[in-house]
Amino acid sequence: MTELEKLKAGLEYCYDDEEVDALKERAIIWCQKFNALDPLDFDGQRTVLKENLGSMGEKVWIAKTFNCDNGKNIHIGNNFTGNYNLTILDIREVYIGDNVMIGPNTLITTVGHPLTPMGRRKHIGIATPVHIGNDVWIGGNVTILPGVTIGNNVVVAAGAVVTKDIPDNTLVGGVPAKKIKDIENDTEENDMQTMELSNGVNIPAVGYGTWQSPDSEVTVEGVKAAVACGYRHIDAAAVYGNEQSVGKGIAECGIPREELFITSKVWNTERGYEKTLAAFEKTIKDLGVSYLDLYLIHWPAASHMFDNWEEINLETWRAMTELYKAGKIKAIGVSNFKPHHLKALIEIGVKPMVNQIEFHPGLLQEETVSFCRENGILVEAWSPLGTGRMLTNPVLQEIAGHYEKSVAQVCIRWAMQHGVLPLPKSVTPSRIEENFKVFDFEINADDMKKIDALDNFGGSGLDPDEVDF
Image (cartoon, rainbow, N blue to C red; front, side, top):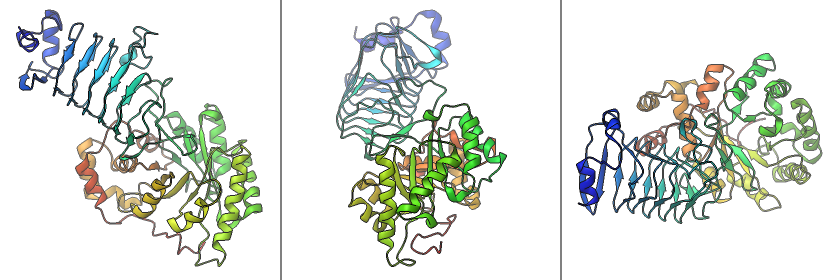
């Protein structure tokens, strides 16, 4: 009797009779075995395969909510497609072959890794390897934990979390990878992901914006609410006029300073070498911190206002580079810089690590984003929700309905899937929390294209080559 015939006969070696009734309602496997498609429909939506299912061969497809739990020597062959909510965990050995697609919301872990579903802690300390082969596509929201070996020519969709040990030719979100966070010590409750800047500093993948927040207890409580629901990245600026309140919120949030990522920006009136140094000292005093994780030039000096605009930007950058080399800032960058503003900075010394620009549906700034990617500069999105009109756009509302999410969540997730780090802002606790819940879904390719095609209907209209401040 072939293995496939045994499966048809009742999978007597996969689970006992007592489990059948409970599993029937939750189980479908369609398994193409020995190059012959033969659906095995168990009248449900979930099947648990246990001890002795040793091998699944070429061209295997497993339907959504498949769970392979606590087995031995699981070999999934080439041309394998694992659909939504696939879980492969606590298995002695797992080999996933070449030309593999692993779908969204997948967890793959070695035996006994501390992060396993539902608080399981089996076989602690037994870390036998998982091997994933070459030419592999891995969907968004996939978790691949440390101890997993991934082959070459791997594409990891935006939103995936993978071990640091990924090959150099891996793609994340369709662009050359900066290695995403090693989550060795994370817990299920901490959903925050990070991206790696060009200097190796990890930056949380969503930030809490403080623009237009008042210098009052409203902002203090907003910062505390953001940290309480999971944010670890706070985006501030001197010109916002609220850094003392932001600093108070940071001091009262209950999270150690070293676990937070704090950004500020030098304002236009303080550009230049000496003024920038003084502005930095005032900012860290107002925030009540001894260092910044990221410091940005808020807007470039531009030719329509200054004949010596390049010199002004370079002198400002010289001060920031000095602070960076002194260890007072972990990363430095710019905001609202276009390619022609950036080129002069790139040609000398330390290159910018971040460019924070206006980015939202209808405003993709493709030339600037492409230039930044080519030069290893992470793009952040201020105003990722645009103006209020964004939230009432019928196209975005329809797409949000597909995922049972808000328009705001779709806009934030859309930015993330473009490899851009969004900085949503609010002082309303419920909206602060809603804006953070964007790690549990992925916008499909068709919906991404629909959003990309939107006209600019909700932008600020501010152009760094035209502003008068």
